[in-house]
Structures are given as C-alpha cells and as structure tokens.
Amino acid sequence: MAFAPRQDNMKTIYFLRHGLVDHKTDEQGVHRDHDPMLNEEGIKQAEKVRDELRDAELPVEIIFCSPLRRAIETMQIAFQDYLKEGHVPVKILPTLQDCGDWECNVGTPTAELEQQFPRYDFSACYEDKLYPKKEGIHKADFETSVLKTQQLAEYFARVPQKNLAVVTHGVCIRLFCGFQKPGETLNATPKDKNSFSPCQYGGYTFHYYSDKTWRFTPLEGKS
Image 1 (tube, helix red, strand yellow):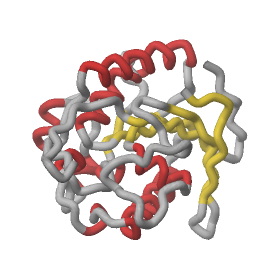
Image 2 (tube, helix red, strand yellow):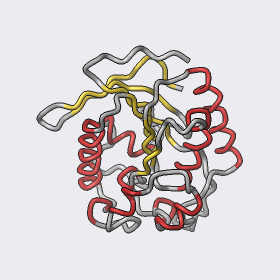
Image 3 (tube, one colour):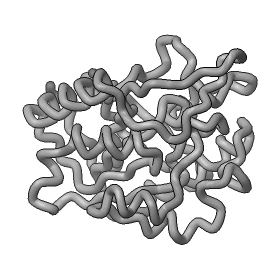
Image 4 (tube, helix red, strand yellow):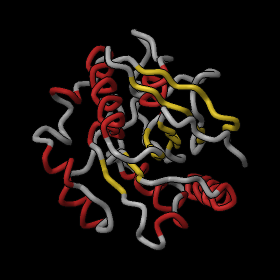
C-alpha cells in the first residue's frame, strides 16, 4: 500500500493498534485477565500486517511501543522485517499503555517483561517509578489520559527521528487524534468510525506547535 510523502516541516507517525486477545469476563462484563497475550486470530492479524508492511517499505526510523504484552507481541510480528537487521530501535514507553484500569489493561512488572522480550529498550519503564501501577500520570481517568497524551506528543516532537511507528491501543490513538470524549470508557475502544480496529494501522503527518497543541493529517491509506 502507498502512503503520501512526508512534508519536510512535519514528522510522520504510523499508528498500529494491537491484535485481538481472549478476555475472561465477569458477570459485570469486566475483563479480569491480567495483561493477556494475542490469541490465534490476533497472531494472524499481526502476520497479515507484517506482509503488508513488507510491501509498503515504510521509512520507519524508530518504533515506540506500549509495555502491554499484546502490543509488544503485535509489534515484533508486524515489524519483523524492519527489526531483522537491528537498524530500527524499539523503545517501550509506559505512557503508551492502555488508559483503563481493568486487569487486562494493567501491565506486567518491567523485569518480567524484559526477560520475556529481551531485545527491546525498557529503560523508560525502569525510570518510571509508578509503572505498572495505575497512579499519577497513569491514573485511569479522562483528564489524566489527556495530560499523558500531551506529554507523549511533546516527547515525539523532541525526538530526532522524523518517521516514527507507534504501537499502542485504540483509546490512546483516539486521544492523539482528538476523538476520545469525556464520559467514554477508557477500558474498551468505542466501536465507531473514529476507532482503529484490532491490528489496523495508518500513517499521519504530525506537527507540534509552540503552544503545545498538535495536528494530525491522515496520509493516503489506512489498513
């Protein structure tokens, strides 16, 4: 698939939502499984993205990924060809974790994650004194999630790379694009036209302004 070229005064961000997982749900509909991995369908979804990204040859310079295991697993399958030579670094950011506080959205301790996925940079998770607790900047409410998104946008604006891949969660992408509204659940991605479905990806031009606002413009193509 083809994407429009990046404008010189903007960065390009390629968002990828993680693939499907199986959830253990209680009588209230709350997901009680802790930090689940991809299910069989989720693995197939990520493999399909891998094949599409192989043909797309995106100019990705760095990958930022949520520390939740379903996101890391999606990333390492989907970007398999980009990781082969070791030229594309992967940085795991605790602020990219899902915004809700159900068990499925609570991360695994960093040392355990690093043991399971030793190839990636977990330094930001070690430096974060709160992760995986849902406290402080990780508190599961709308206002805190907006603040966290503002911090991430500023961080992405500061990194030297111009072409970024971001593997995260549906609500996080909605927050970046300005679609998430107060009162909408943070524990499950709303099913509307503004949400990415599992393993959906898309490219955006990103410009960050001096007043700490930003703008995303979709590139041609969203799969």
